[in-house]
Image 1 (cartoon, rainbow, N blue to C red):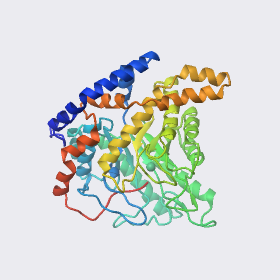
Image 2: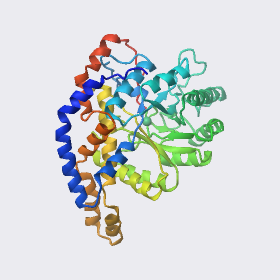
Image 3: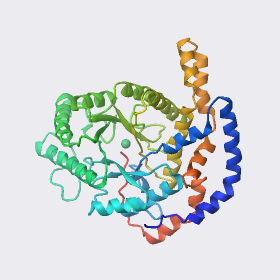
Image 4: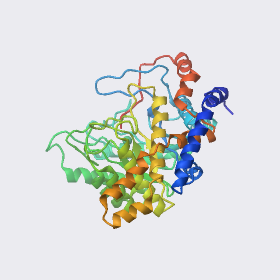
Length: 430
Ligand SMILES: [Mn+2]
């Protein structure tokens, strides 16, 4: 077994310095929750089992349309990306799976890649295809679209690429393909909405036919960018139409940043759950557009409201398990720190949603008492669940304070020496 990236004695030393205070805080919160009839150990167990995938591209520094400022010791290939994901998992214990982007992460030998991941305690999540940029020596260009392109040849090339992603995914143990496209138009009149959507659906049907029966096909909607007037799958309505016309393996993927400002995302989530079409999430946060900021950093209440719907659905159907992934662009932070923090925020929202008194909430809803219904819901959000999150990490062998421990480990300085700046970037903002 390869040694894990952070030395065990660093974690032990850092945890020892914090263990006493955590025990005190955890006991105090446990007593408070017990008064409400909630067993803190049961909540901790659920939180511990709740994990979120990290995107391979998230460990590189992102950029904007203006510039990209590379960070120190950026991973230069998929193996180094896995090392960084291994750090995130080792310290935070919330991110045991990595989502690959092809061709950025195309492995020479999938078996070797799988073995490397396993040595770090990692597995693979959904495969992500890329038909929104041209690759070196690519025959047809995607400048004017891919799966919905007017040329049959270009569409076929895009379909083939997705089928290749499925093949690689099969070899490394993935169970899903996420299709996001940049297709759309920049000007009214540039494209015929109906014919373009027909071409897209026809291409997607070819991909769908090759999706293994135990896989899911996720479609991600996005209202604008890189196309600025229209996109083929611009919202959850078009997404729903696409997945229902394809078949049961097709599900909608909700990226929190891919909606119009002020859209009621938690309600979209509820609707998709109700009709069995919510496939999963790309978590991030935003202030203005698809900002891809750290999850929960701008609007933690919205994240909580999304999780309120997920917990509600989980109680009605224990088999309900949508796919969770972070999809962020880390422009000014150390990506490892952002990923650790964001996974923790996802768990925080989950824990808070678990603490909502659902019986009381339903009672106030049915009695038409808006104030108390709102209070009961918000009560879950107000509880500081950090001791639960820290205890879940400690019990799983992670760090009580993962970011402080990461900084104490000197990992970034070490890899900065081993990985001289390459100048290139495989990071993306999808
Ligand atoms: Mn996304």
